[in-house]
Amino acid sequence: MTDQGPIRQSSGQRPEARRDPRLNWWRDAKFGMFVHWGLYAIPAGVWKGEEIPGIGEWIMYRARIPVREYEQLAKQFNPVKFDAAEWVSLARRAGQKYLVITSKHHDGFCMFDSKVTDYDIVDATPFGRDPLKELAAECQRQGIRLGFYYSQTQDWHHPDGDGNDWDYDESKKDFDGYLERYVKPQVRELLTSYGPISIIWFDTPKRITPEQSQSLVDLVHELQPACLVSGRVGNHLGDYASARDNVIPAELLDLDWETPATINDTWGYKVNDHHWKSPRDLIRKLVDIVSKGGNYLLNVGPTAEGVIPAPSVDRLLAMGQWLEVNGDAIYGTRPGPVQGLQWCRTTVRPGKLYLHVFEWPINGELRIPGIRLNVSHAYLLSDPSRTSLRASTHPDAVLVRGPQRAPDPDDTVVVLEYEE
Ligand code: JFZ
Image 1 (spheres, rainbow, N blue to C red):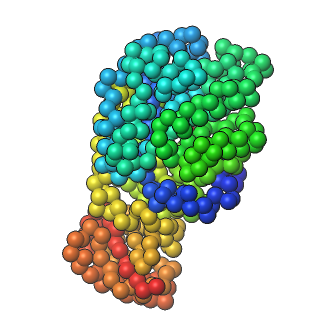
Image 2 (image 1 turned 135 degrees about the vertical axis):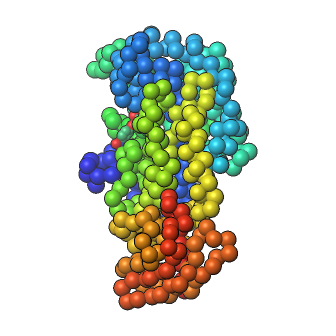
Image 3 (image 1 turned 135 degrees about the horizontal axis):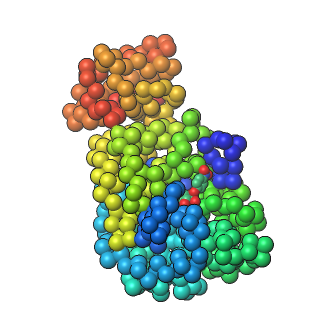
């Protein structure tokens, strides 16, 4: 896999993980909520009256904000509208099965009560609460798995972390010391104080060596053997691979992979980013990803008050409504046998093939090339009465006669039950 491919060279899945049953829940889950939340939600893309281009959580870097200045944001961080129950309930209603939230992003600010530093939400802000504790309790209560994003290499606040060359001299950094005495104790905190954690989502490996990546993987698995490690731990050592941000591979990949993606064009909240993808686009991206064997980790960027922006909420609820009807064709499925069609995607489970029709044919006559199936019952997944559609098997195709007009313009799912 090259750097131009869908998966970054530095991010990957250990070959032994491919058949590891520890990933079974994740393989069935398909859809998760990513949350990028931190001090960067205060400037929200604007610094000293100037619009800073790029993704919101990178503002400290893009505007070269000195540590002493950026730190001051903590004194203003008071997200009184934060409600863990509401966030988790949104994920649930959206049909998302897991939630991954930034515990520490590249800016170095810790969104949990860390004993290793005072640069954290409990010690440095007027808010004084630990949102990760509250989310952990709610996720338990509402049956959503919880993961923590943790920036292991880049830390623009720590003098020995990677990335900040405007406050610190890169050549004088003791990166290994930072890993041993800061990163590992924090990973230990995250895996010992918040109950069962399903994923540690490391990111941007950059300078981390294979030995250092391996030691992080070992630490996570020692503390919580079931916890998955994202591919971005570096050096091809993750439990599953991560696609490049917002990139969907052109074809099915024979590995466990996930596309992290945004609903607009930023991860961390930006007040002036209104470039929202449509519900149809998001539903089809989910289907496209699942049909190629991946998971969709879809991001929200809450405000400094702790509110998930309304356009994100609306879109997630629309996806949840579609999944409410069509979830059988997503959760627990595997990529279907027909790949590479423009108008249609396929997913399967034993005895059932799901056709996801994006472009409904004019006369309602669906022709699925390249498969031979003994179809015993064909029907629309949205049809509670499961009225049979006429289906016929031909040497080179299966034909299904559907209604004249697309029942669901976002994605109509046709179920083909077949004898194995
Ligand atoms: C990283 C972060 O720098 C970013 O702030 C955000 O957290 C995102 C989810 O991950 O950005 C990346 C990492 C990897 C690629 C692109 C952006 N990549 O492999 O193409």
